[in-house]
Length: 98
Image (cartoon, one colour):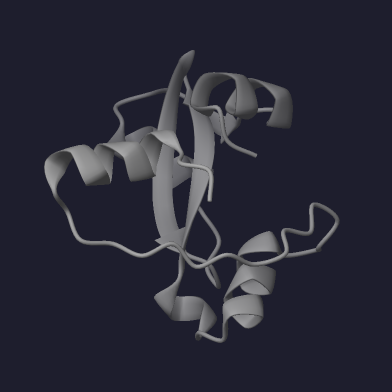
């Protein structure tokens, strides 16, 4: 299986982990919930990673896959004026992940 930046870092740090493959569906209405269903776990137990732009700075938010992110709350927590989701293209370019 191909390693990612995240799995490479886990291995380098000696952190125990396991990769659970599933069939990614970019067209799923709720990708995080689709992933949870695909691997047989409750959506609230699987985190999704959302890439957000906060006043011109990219940020990463990890939340349960069955929840929605408040952009106002993100902006407030990050001391920004405004928060919005990064475009898919920008998120993939910054992280290297789909």
